[in-house]
Length: 445
Ligand code: S3P
Image (tube, rainbow, N blue to C red; front, side, top):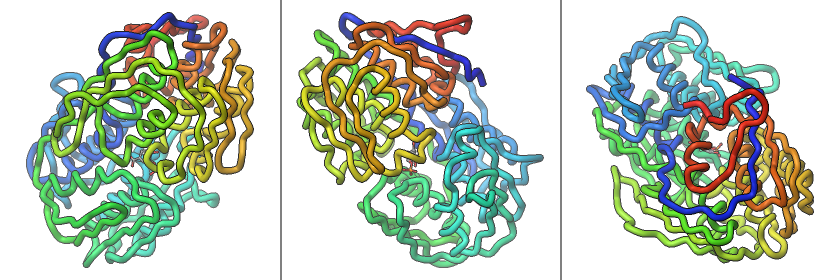
Protein backbone atom coordinates (compact mmCIF):
# COMPACT_ATOMS: atom_id res chain seq x y z
CA UNK A 1 0.00 0.00 0.00
CA UNK A 2 1.41 3.35 -1.03
CA UNK A 3 -0.08 5.70 1.56
CA UNK A 4 1.91 8.58 0.07
CA UNK A 5 0.01 8.78 -3.23
CA UNK A 6 -0.99 12.44 -3.60
CA UNK A 7 -3.11 14.08 -6.25
CA UNK A 8 -4.16 17.56 -7.23
CA UNK A 9 -7.48 18.21 -8.92
CA UNK A 10 -7.75 21.32 -11.09
CA UNK A 11 -10.60 23.48 -12.37
CA UNK A 12 -12.00 22.03 -15.61
CA UNK A 13 -13.83 23.44 -18.62
CA UNK A 14 -16.63 20.91 -18.99
CA UNK A 15 -17.13 17.15 -18.79
CA UNK A 16 -18.36 15.19 -21.76
CA UNK A 17 -18.38 11.74 -23.33
CA UNK A 18 -19.35 8.27 -22.14
CA UNK A 19 -18.11 6.52 -19.05
CA UNK A 20 -18.48 3.00 -17.75
CA UNK A 21 -17.40 2.82 -14.13
CA UNK A 22 -16.18 -0.53 -12.70
CA UNK A 23 -18.40 -3.27 -11.30
CA UNK A 24 -20.44 -3.03 -8.13
CA UNK A 25 -18.41 -3.70 -5.00
CA UNK A 26 -21.24 -5.10 -2.87
CA UNK A 27 -22.34 -7.51 -5.58
CA UNK A 28 -18.75 -8.58 -6.40
CA UNK A 29 -18.04 -9.56 -2.77
CA UNK A 30 -21.26 -11.54 -2.52
CA UNK A 31 -20.83 -13.24 -5.90
CA UNK A 32 -17.44 -14.64 -4.87
CA UNK A 33 -18.81 -15.84 -1.53
CA UNK A 34 -21.91 -17.61 -2.82
CA UNK A 35 -20.16 -19.04 -5.88
CA UNK A 36 -17.45 -20.46 -3.60
CA UNK A 37 -20.07 -22.23 -1.49
CA UNK A 38 -22.11 -23.48 -4.45
CA UNK A 39 -22.02 -26.88 -6.12
CA UNK A 40 -20.37 -26.39 -9.53
CA UNK A 41 -18.66 -23.54 -11.38
CA UNK A 42 -20.00 -20.01 -11.70
CA UNK A 43 -18.82 -17.29 -14.08
CA UNK A 44 -18.77 -13.76 -12.70
CA UNK A 45 -18.67 -11.01 -15.34
CA UNK A 46 -18.12 -7.37 -14.49
CA UNK A 47 -16.27 -8.33 -11.28
CA UNK A 48 -14.73 -5.31 -9.57
CA UNK A 49 -10.94 -5.55 -9.87
CA UNK A 50 -10.56 -3.48 -6.69
CA UNK A 51 -8.37 -4.30 -3.73
CA UNK A 52 -11.38 -4.97 -1.47
CA UNK A 53 -13.02 -7.55 -3.68
CA UNK A 54 -9.72 -9.14 -4.66
CA UNK A 55 -9.01 -9.61 -0.95
CA UNK A 56 -12.30 -11.50 -0.66
CA UNK A 57 -11.42 -13.70 -3.63
CA UNK A 58 -7.99 -14.37 -2.10
CA UNK A 59 -9.63 -15.39 1.18
CA UNK A 60 -11.54 -18.15 -0.60
CA UNK A 61 -8.53 -19.27 -2.61
CA UNK A 62 -6.76 -19.73 0.68
CA UNK A 63 -9.69 -21.80 1.94
CA UNK A 64 -9.32 -24.21 -0.98
CA UNK A 65 -11.54 -22.68 -3.68
CA UNK A 66 -10.11 -22.54 -7.20
CA UNK A 67 -10.84 -19.17 -8.76
CA UNK A 68 -9.67 -18.54 -12.33
CA UNK A 69 -9.21 -15.03 -13.70
CA UNK A 70 -9.17 -15.59 -17.49
CA UNK A 71 -9.48 -11.86 -18.15
CA UNK A 72 -9.96 -8.61 -16.29
CA UNK A 73 -13.36 -8.35 -14.58
CA UNK A 74 -14.09 -12.04 -15.13
CA UNK A 75 -13.81 -14.77 -12.51
CA UNK A 76 -14.66 -18.44 -12.78
CA UNK A 77 -15.29 -19.78 -9.32
CA UNK A 78 -15.20 -23.54 -8.86
CA UNK A 79 -17.50 -23.94 -5.89
CA UNK A 80 -16.70 -26.48 -3.20
CA UNK A 81 -20.21 -26.80 -1.78
CA UNK A 82 -21.57 -25.53 1.53
CA UNK A 83 -19.26 -27.73 3.61
CA UNK A 84 -16.23 -27.87 1.31
CA UNK A 85 -14.09 -25.01 2.66
CA UNK A 86 -10.95 -25.81 4.60
CA UNK A 87 -9.03 -23.71 7.09
CA UNK A 88 -6.70 -21.08 5.64
CA UNK A 89 -3.06 -21.55 6.60
CA UNK A 90 -2.99 -18.34 8.66
CA UNK A 91 -4.94 -15.11 9.22
CA UNK A 92 -7.23 -13.99 6.40
CA UNK A 93 -6.47 -10.39 5.42
CA UNK A 94 -9.62 -8.47 4.46
CA UNK A 95 -7.61 -5.33 3.65
CA UNK A 96 -9.77 -2.21 3.86
CA UNK A 97 -13.07 -4.02 3.39
CA UNK A 98 -15.74 -3.84 6.09
CA UNK A 99 -18.08 -5.79 3.82
CA UNK A 100 -15.53 -8.56 3.35
CA UNK A 101 -14.83 -8.92 7.04
CA UNK A 102 -18.38 -8.67 8.37
CA UNK A 103 -19.87 -11.05 5.81
CA UNK A 104 -17.01 -13.50 6.29
CA UNK A 105 -17.60 -13.42 10.05
CA UNK A 106 -21.12 -14.74 9.48
CA UNK A 107 -20.12 -17.28 6.87
CA UNK A 108 -17.14 -18.61 8.85
CA UNK A 109 -19.16 -18.89 12.06
CA UNK A 110 -20.78 -21.99 10.56
CA UNK A 111 -17.57 -23.78 9.55
CA UNK A 112 -15.92 -26.78 11.20
CA UNK A 113 -12.60 -24.90 11.59
CA UNK A 114 -11.28 -21.78 13.30
CA UNK A 115 -10.42 -18.61 11.36
CA UNK A 116 -8.74 -15.33 12.09
CA UNK A 117 -9.78 -12.18 10.20
CA UNK A 118 -7.45 -9.19 10.06
CA UNK A 119 -7.51 -5.88 8.18
CA UNK A 120 -5.59 -2.68 7.50
CA UNK A 121 -5.32 0.21 9.96
CA UNK A 122 -8.72 1.68 9.00
CA UNK A 123 -10.58 -1.65 9.14
CA UNK A 124 -8.88 -2.43 12.45
CA UNK A 125 -10.66 0.58 13.96
CA UNK A 126 -14.16 -0.34 12.77
CA UNK A 127 -16.88 -1.68 15.08
CA UNK A 128 -17.51 -5.41 14.89
CA UNK A 129 -19.84 -5.95 17.86
CA UNK A 130 -22.70 -5.18 15.50
CA UNK A 131 -22.06 -8.59 13.89
CA UNK A 132 -20.49 -10.44 16.81
CA UNK A 133 -23.52 -9.96 19.09
CA UNK A 134 -26.29 -11.17 16.76
CA UNK A 135 -24.11 -14.07 15.60
CA UNK A 136 -23.49 -15.00 19.25
CA UNK A 137 -27.26 -15.21 19.75
CA UNK A 138 -27.23 -17.92 17.06
CA UNK A 139 -24.52 -19.84 18.94
CA UNK A 140 -21.46 -18.45 17.15
CA UNK A 141 -18.24 -17.80 19.08
CA UNK A 142 -16.34 -14.82 17.75
CA UNK A 143 -13.86 -12.81 19.76
CA UNK A 144 -12.47 -9.37 18.98
CA UNK A 145 -10.25 -6.84 20.76
CA UNK A 146 -11.62 -5.46 24.05
CA UNK A 147 -12.95 -2.48 22.09
CA UNK A 148 -14.90 -4.85 19.80
CA UNK A 149 -12.60 -4.29 16.83
CA UNK A 150 -10.54 -6.58 14.57
CA UNK A 151 -8.76 -8.92 14.51
CA UNK A 152 -11.66 -11.35 14.79
CA UNK A 153 -11.18 -14.93 15.94
CA UNK A 154 -14.04 -17.02 14.59
CA UNK A 155 -14.28 -20.34 16.42
CA UNK A 156 -15.56 -23.21 14.31
CA UNK A 157 -17.50 -26.36 15.24
CA UNK A 158 -20.34 -24.41 16.85
CA UNK A 159 -23.88 -25.53 16.33
CA UNK A 160 -25.87 -22.54 15.10
CA UNK A 161 -29.55 -22.00 15.74
CA UNK A 162 -31.75 -19.70 13.67
CA UNK A 163 -33.53 -16.85 15.45
CA UNK A 164 -35.19 -13.48 14.88
CA UNK A 165 -32.95 -10.40 14.70
CA UNK A 166 -33.96 -6.76 14.81
CA UNK A 167 -30.64 -4.93 14.39
CA UNK A 168 -30.40 -1.49 15.98
CA UNK A 169 -28.36 -0.08 13.10
CA UNK A 170 -29.53 0.01 9.50
CA UNK A 171 -26.79 -2.13 7.93
CA UNK A 172 -26.80 -4.48 4.98
CA UNK A 173 -23.52 -5.87 6.22
CA UNK A 174 -25.07 -6.91 9.54
CA UNK A 175 -28.14 -8.35 7.81
CA UNK A 176 -25.96 -10.26 5.35
CA UNK A 177 -23.65 -11.67 8.05
CA UNK A 178 -26.72 -13.02 9.86
CA UNK A 179 -28.19 -14.54 6.69
CA UNK A 180 -24.89 -16.21 5.77
CA UNK A 181 -24.69 -17.74 9.24
CA UNK A 182 -28.31 -18.75 8.72
CA UNK A 183 -27.25 -21.03 5.86
CA UNK A 184 -25.54 -23.19 8.50
CA UNK A 185 -28.15 -22.80 11.26
CA UNK A 186 -30.91 -25.12 12.28
CA UNK A 187 -34.38 -23.70 11.78
CA UNK A 188 -35.38 -20.25 10.62
CA UNK A 189 -33.21 -17.15 10.62
CA UNK A 190 -35.07 -13.89 10.21
CA UNK A 191 -33.95 -10.26 10.04
CA UNK A 192 -36.32 -7.33 10.48
CA UNK A 193 -34.90 -3.90 9.81
CA UNK A 194 -36.09 -0.52 11.07
CA UNK A 195 -34.82 1.03 7.83
CA UNK A 196 -34.60 -1.18 4.72
CA UNK A 197 -31.06 -1.68 3.36
CA UNK A 198 -29.63 -3.03 0.11
CA UNK A 199 -30.95 -6.52 -0.60
CA UNK A 200 -28.17 -8.00 -2.75
CA UNK A 201 -27.56 -10.95 -0.43
CA UNK A 202 -31.23 -11.88 -0.51
CA UNK A 203 -31.47 -11.59 -4.31
CA UNK A 204 -28.28 -13.50 -4.85
CA UNK A 205 -29.22 -16.29 -2.46
CA UNK A 206 -32.44 -16.70 -4.43
CA UNK A 207 -30.49 -16.68 -7.72
CA UNK A 208 -28.21 -19.44 -6.37
CA UNK A 209 -31.31 -21.51 -5.63
CA UNK A 210 -31.55 -21.13 -1.84
CA UNK A 211 -35.16 -20.89 -0.66
CA UNK A 212 -35.51 -17.39 0.83
CA UNK A 213 -38.43 -15.09 1.50
CA UNK A 214 -37.78 -11.39 1.60
CA UNK A 215 -39.31 -7.99 1.11
CA UNK A 216 -38.57 -4.39 1.96
CA UNK A 217 -36.87 -4.45 5.38
CA UNK A 218 -37.19 -8.17 6.13
CA UNK A 219 -35.70 -11.50 5.11
CA UNK A 220 -36.22 -15.08 6.27
CA UNK A 221 -34.30 -18.25 5.40
CA UNK A 222 -33.94 -21.77 6.68
CA UNK A 223 -30.75 -23.75 7.03
CA UNK A 224 -30.11 -27.09 5.42
CA UNK A 225 -30.31 -26.40 1.69
CA UNK A 226 -27.66 -26.18 -1.04
CA UNK A 227 -26.42 -23.44 -3.36
CA UNK A 228 -26.44 -24.12 -7.10
CA UNK A 229 -23.72 -22.58 -9.31
CA UNK A 230 -25.03 -19.55 -11.18
CA UNK A 231 -23.48 -17.02 -13.53
CA UNK A 232 -23.51 -13.44 -12.28
CA UNK A 233 -23.42 -10.23 -14.33
CA UNK A 234 -22.26 -7.38 -12.13
CA UNK A 235 -23.63 -3.94 -13.03
CA UNK A 236 -21.52 -0.76 -12.83
CA UNK A 237 -21.33 0.49 -9.26
CA UNK A 238 -23.77 3.32 -8.53
CA UNK A 239 -21.46 4.59 -5.79
CA UNK A 240 -18.62 5.01 -8.29
CA UNK A 241 -20.97 6.59 -10.82
CA UNK A 242 -22.02 9.06 -8.10
CA UNK A 243 -18.76 11.02 -8.43
CA UNK A 244 -19.52 11.62 -12.10
CA UNK A 245 -23.18 12.43 -11.47
CA UNK A 246 -22.17 15.23 -9.12
CA UNK A 247 -19.19 16.31 -11.22
CA UNK A 248 -21.20 16.77 -14.43
CA UNK A 249 -23.99 18.48 -12.48
CA UNK A 250 -21.72 21.17 -11.08
CA UNK A 251 -19.38 21.90 -14.01
CA UNK A 252 -21.05 24.30 -16.50
CA UNK A 253 -21.50 22.93 -20.02
CA UNK A 254 -21.14 19.28 -19.01
CA UNK A 255 -23.00 16.43 -20.69
CA UNK A 256 -21.98 12.90 -19.65
CA UNK A 257 -23.43 9.46 -20.26
CA UNK A 258 -22.81 6.82 -17.59
CA UNK A 259 -23.32 3.34 -19.00
CA UNK A 260 -24.93 0.30 -17.37
CA UNK A 261 -25.26 1.68 -13.83
CA UNK A 262 -26.88 -0.54 -11.18
CA UNK A 263 -30.20 1.01 -10.16
CA UNK A 264 -31.19 -1.07 -7.12
CA UNK A 265 -33.56 1.28 -5.32
CA UNK A 266 -31.79 0.74 -1.98
CA UNK A 267 -28.66 2.27 -3.57
CA UNK A 268 -29.93 5.22 -5.55
CA UNK A 269 -30.88 7.65 -2.80
CA UNK A 270 -28.38 10.17 -4.17
CA UNK A 271 -30.26 10.28 -7.46
CA UNK A 272 -33.44 11.38 -5.68
CA UNK A 273 -31.55 13.92 -3.59
CA UNK A 274 -29.70 15.37 -6.58
CA UNK A 275 -32.99 15.74 -8.45
CA UNK A 276 -34.50 17.49 -5.42
CA UNK A 277 -31.52 19.86 -5.62
CA UNK A 278 -32.31 20.58 -9.27
CA UNK A 279 -29.96 18.17 -11.06
CA UNK A 280 -30.71 17.19 -14.66
CA UNK A 281 -30.23 13.41 -14.70
CA UNK A 282 -32.20 11.27 -17.15
CA UNK A 283 -32.41 7.48 -17.13
CA UNK A 284 -32.03 5.98 -20.59
CA UNK A 285 -32.44 2.34 -21.66
CA UNK A 286 -33.60 1.04 -18.29
CA UNK A 287 -33.30 -2.74 -18.40
CA UNK A 288 -32.91 -5.91 -16.32
CA UNK A 289 -29.48 -7.51 -16.13
CA UNK A 290 -28.98 -10.65 -14.08
CA UNK A 291 -31.94 -9.87 -11.83
CA UNK A 292 -30.92 -6.24 -11.20
CA UNK A 293 -32.17 -3.05 -12.87
CA UNK A 294 -29.53 -1.11 -14.74
CA UNK A 295 -29.76 2.09 -16.76
CA UNK A 296 -27.60 4.53 -18.69
CA UNK A 297 -27.63 7.85 -16.88
CA UNK A 298 -27.42 11.07 -18.90
CA UNK A 299 -26.33 13.96 -16.71
CA UNK A 300 -26.15 17.58 -17.80
CA UNK A 301 -25.00 20.58 -15.87
CA UNK A 302 -27.76 22.31 -13.89
CA UNK A 303 -27.71 24.86 -11.10
CA UNK A 304 -28.20 23.16 -7.73
CA UNK A 305 -29.99 24.47 -4.65
CA UNK A 306 -29.51 23.35 -1.05
CA UNK A 307 -32.09 21.10 0.62
CA UNK A 308 -32.76 19.23 3.85
CA UNK A 309 -31.77 15.66 2.96
CA UNK A 310 -34.77 13.44 3.81
CA UNK A 311 -33.93 11.06 6.67
CA UNK A 312 -35.77 8.31 4.81
CA UNK A 313 -33.07 8.41 2.09
CA UNK A 314 -30.01 8.24 4.36
CA UNK A 315 -29.58 4.45 4.22
CA UNK A 316 -30.14 4.45 0.44
CA UNK A 317 -27.20 6.81 -0.09
CA UNK A 318 -25.00 5.87 2.84
CA UNK A 319 -21.80 5.73 0.73
CA UNK A 320 -22.58 8.90 -1.22
CA UNK A 321 -22.36 11.55 1.52
CA UNK A 322 -18.78 12.66 0.80
CA UNK A 323 -19.69 13.61 -2.76
CA UNK A 324 -23.11 14.95 -1.71
CA UNK A 325 -21.25 17.37 0.59
CA UNK A 326 -19.38 18.63 -2.47
CA UNK A 327 -22.66 19.07 -4.37
CA UNK A 328 -23.97 20.98 -1.35
CA UNK A 329 -20.88 23.21 -1.32
CA UNK A 330 -21.51 23.97 -5.00
CA UNK A 331 -25.24 24.62 -4.53
CA UNK A 332 -27.08 27.84 -3.85
CA UNK A 333 -28.25 27.94 -0.23
CA UNK A 334 -27.99 25.56 2.70
CA UNK A 335 -27.99 21.77 2.76
CA UNK A 336 -28.73 20.00 6.02
CA UNK A 337 -27.85 16.34 6.74
CA UNK A 338 -29.30 14.76 9.88
CA UNK A 339 -29.57 11.30 11.45
CA UNK A 340 -26.51 9.95 9.71
CA UNK A 341 -24.21 8.99 12.63
CA UNK A 342 -23.09 5.88 10.71
CA UNK A 343 -20.90 8.21 8.65
CA UNK A 344 -18.55 8.37 11.62
CA UNK A 345 -17.71 4.65 11.42
CA UNK A 346 -17.05 4.18 7.72
CA UNK A 347 -13.54 3.87 6.24
CA UNK A 348 -12.93 7.15 8.09
CA UNK A 349 -15.06 9.48 10.20
CA UNK A 350 -16.63 10.96 7.09
CA UNK A 351 -18.45 13.78 8.88
CA UNK A 352 -15.21 14.96 10.45
CA UNK A 353 -13.08 14.53 7.33
CA UNK A 354 -15.53 16.28 5.01
CA UNK A 355 -16.08 19.11 7.49
CA UNK A 356 -12.35 19.59 7.93
CA UNK A 357 -11.60 19.39 4.21
CA UNK A 358 -14.40 21.68 3.06
CA UNK A 359 -13.50 24.21 5.76
CA UNK A 360 -9.92 24.14 4.42
CA UNK A 361 -11.42 25.08 1.03
CA UNK A 362 -13.24 28.06 2.52
CA UNK A 363 -16.70 26.43 2.65
CA UNK A 364 -18.91 27.32 5.62
CA UNK A 365 -19.80 24.02 7.23
CA UNK A 366 -21.03 23.17 10.71
CA UNK A 367 -20.28 19.63 11.81
CA UNK A 368 -22.98 18.08 14.01
CA UNK A 369 -22.98 14.83 15.97
CA UNK A 370 -25.11 13.07 13.35
CA UNK A 371 -24.79 15.27 10.28
CA UNK A 372 -23.79 18.70 9.04
CA UNK A 373 -25.05 22.04 7.79
CA UNK A 374 -23.33 23.17 4.59
CA UNK A 375 -23.57 26.65 3.15
CA UNK A 376 -23.14 26.53 -0.62
CA UNK A 377 -21.15 29.14 -2.49
CA UNK A 378 -17.57 29.33 -3.57
CA UNK A 379 -14.92 26.63 -3.15
CA UNK A 380 -11.38 27.96 -2.74
CA UNK A 381 -8.13 26.27 -3.66
CA UNK A 382 -6.40 24.45 -0.83
CA UNK A 383 -5.04 21.27 0.64
CA UNK A 384 -7.10 18.47 2.19
CA UNK A 385 -6.55 15.07 3.81
CA UNK A 386 -8.44 11.94 2.84
CA UNK A 387 -7.45 9.90 5.91
CA UNK A 388 -6.87 7.04 3.47
CA UNK A 389 -10.60 6.97 2.67
CA UNK A 390 -11.24 6.26 -1.03
CA UNK A 391 -14.54 8.11 -1.18
CA UNK A 392 -13.19 11.22 0.56
CA UNK A 393 -10.28 11.35 -1.92
CA UNK A 394 -12.60 11.05 -4.95
CA UNK A 395 -15.10 13.57 -3.52
CA UNK A 396 -12.35 16.18 -3.24
CA UNK A 397 -11.29 15.46 -6.83
CA UNK A 398 -14.83 16.51 -7.76
CA UNK A 399 -14.51 19.66 -5.61
CA UNK A 400 -11.32 20.58 -7.50
CA UNK A 401 -13.28 20.82 -10.77
CA UNK A 402 -15.01 24.02 -9.69
CA UNK A 403 -12.58 25.36 -7.11
CA UNK A 404 -10.84 28.70 -7.64
CA UNK A 405 -7.54 26.86 -8.01
CA UNK A 406 -6.06 23.39 -7.45
CA UNK A 407 -7.24 21.18 -4.61
CA UNK A 408 -4.35 19.10 -3.27
CA UNK A 409 -5.39 15.75 -1.79
CA UNK A 410 -3.17 13.58 0.35
CA UNK A 411 -3.23 9.83 0.83
CA UNK A 412 -5.14 8.72 -2.29
CA UNK A 413 -3.86 5.13 -2.58
CA UNK A 414 -7.03 3.57 -1.25
CA UNK A 415 -9.03 4.76 -4.25
CA UNK A 416 -7.82 1.43 -5.66
CA UNK A 417 -9.97 -0.41 -3.11
CA UNK A 418 -13.18 0.47 -4.95
CA UNK A 419 -12.27 2.30 -8.15
CA UNK A 420 -9.19 1.08 -10.00
CA UNK A 421 -8.46 3.36 -12.94
CA UNK A 422 -10.38 6.32 -11.48
CA UNK A 423 -7.86 8.94 -12.58
CA UNK A 424 -7.65 7.69 -16.16
CA UNK A 425 -11.42 7.45 -16.52
CA UNK A 426 -12.01 10.85 -14.90
CA UNK A 427 -9.30 12.61 -16.93
CA UNK A 428 -10.69 10.95 -20.06
CA UNK A 429 -13.95 12.86 -19.71
CA UNK A 430 -12.51 16.21 -18.68
CA UNK A 431 -11.24 16.06 -15.08
CA UNK A 432 -7.73 17.39 -14.59
CA UNK A 433 -6.18 15.23 -11.86
CA UNK A 434 -2.41 15.17 -11.59
CA UNK A 435 0.08 13.30 -9.47
CA UNK A 436 1.97 15.41 -6.93
CA UNK A 437 5.47 14.48 -5.96
CA UNK A 438 7.30 11.50 -7.32
CA UNK A 439 4.48 8.98 -7.36
CA UNK A 440 2.56 8.27 -10.55
CA UNK A 441 -0.96 9.65 -10.94
CA UNK A 442 -2.88 6.46 -11.28
CA UNK A 443 -4.95 4.43 -8.88
CA UNK A 444 -3.70 0.87 -9.03
CA UNK A 445 -5.89 -1.93 -10.30
C1 S3P B 1 -22.35 -2.51 2.15
C2 S3P B 1 -23.17 -1.92 3.05
C3 S3P B 1 -22.95 -0.58 3.61
C4 S3P B 1 -21.99 0.24 2.75
C5 S3P B 1 -20.80 -0.54 2.34
C6 S3P B 1 -21.20 -1.79 1.56
C7 S3P B 1 -22.64 -3.89 1.69
O1 S3P B 1 -22.40 -0.70 4.90
O2 S3P B 1 -21.58 1.40 3.45
O3 S3P B 1 -19.95 0.26 1.54
O4 S3P B 1 -22.07 -4.32 0.69
O5 S3P B 1 -23.46 -4.54 2.35
P1 S3P B 1 -23.35 -0.84 6.18
O6 S3P B 1 -24.10 -2.08 6.00
O7 S3P B 1 -22.42 -0.95 7.35
O8 S3P B 1 -24.17 0.40 6.19
